[in-house]
Image (cartoon, rainbow, N blue to C red; front, side, top):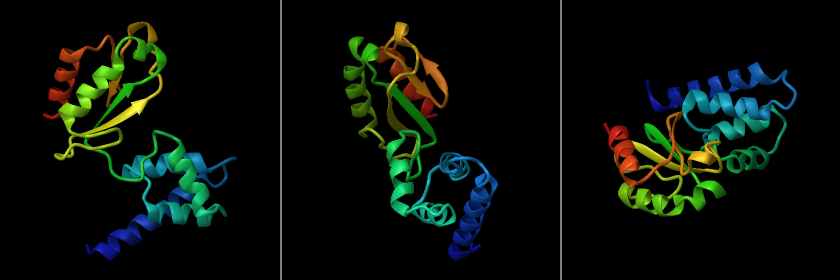
Length: 159
C-alpha cells in the first residue's frame, strides 16, 4: 500500500468516527477520544477533517487538543509514564524525582525517549495523595515512589 492510500484510509476512518459521534450533544470530545484511541494521537490532518465535519474552525479543534493533557498531536512512546505534580506529591518530593526521571530518560515533559520506549507526561492528581509521590505507567499506578522504585519502573518499561 502506498503512502497516499494510507492517508486516504486514515481520512476515511476519521470521517467514520465523526459520523458515529455526530448525534451526541457536544460530539467533539468523544470524536477526539476515539481518534486518539485508534491512531495514538490526533494528527493535523484529522483536526482539519473533524473541524469541517462538525462545522468548527481548525483552531477550535486544535485548542481542545492542546488544552487537555491526555490528547497528543504526535505519536507517544510504547509506554506512557505519568508523574503526578499536584500539591501533595510536590510536598513529598516529586519535583526532585521528576528531574531525576528526565535526566535518566534524556527527555523533558511530553518527550519520548530516543528508542521510542517511554513518553513522559505530567499529570495533576492521580488520587493517591495520602501515598505521595505517585506515578502511572500504562494505566498501572505506583505510590510512595522513590528513586529505586522509579528505576525499577523505567527498567521494566524499556524491556
